[in-house]
Length: 198
Ligand code: ADP
Ligand code: TYD
Image 1: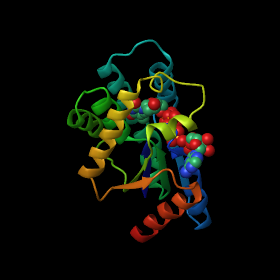
Image 2: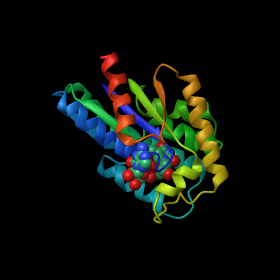
Image 3: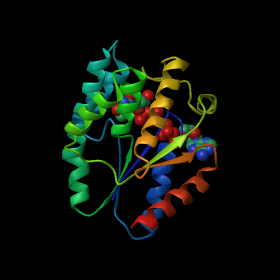
Image 4: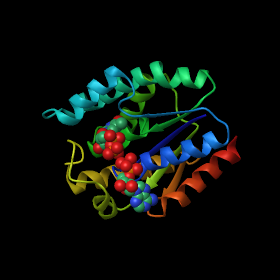
């Protein structure tokens, strides 16, 4: 099974990835946790270029994320799925669609198409979208901001709208969760949703 977590920075994706790992391992499953855009050496280098370098043009940004993702899928995600493991990914294709497609205005469909080509059509079996107001998120992220986190409120509002549009478009794959609830409560709902579907 391939599962991804999505949402704004600070929405609780890595917290939920770890809580899901613990629950799946308690069920006796092998779990690989990985994150976008890293997970491979090339991916980490690309992540550094995109997040900590100077200005990156929107299409360059979209293509760099897609390049990191192509490497990540072939070297990490697909092999783990073929070994029968669970793969839990902190951000995947939907992040590019929401941030570059809608946030940067490159177009939801164009960025989706680019990414589906980059990953050979591999989409998660289930995606959990953690929804939270920008104000709630602001209280959670610390003082260390990367290049995307420094974008203005309007940018993050567009990204949130992009995520909502994706959830409407793919209602069977994307499960929308209220990210303001206590972490353990959210984790129970995630685990329950996966148990039903396996
Ligand atoms: P992300 O991976 O989406 O950036 P994190 O999981 O790192 O988010 O969470 C960001 C911060 O918010 C952390 O300090 C974490 O402890 C806290 N946090 C995570 N989930 C919740 C929650 N459901 N309620 C309150 N605080 C949370
Ligand atoms: P990440 O390190 O996952 O942020 P966090 O753990 O704080 O949620 O991602 C860093 C930034 O990269 C984040 O602001 C979102 C952005 N991003 C994109 O714009 N497009 C993408 O395809 C991905 C994977 C991330």
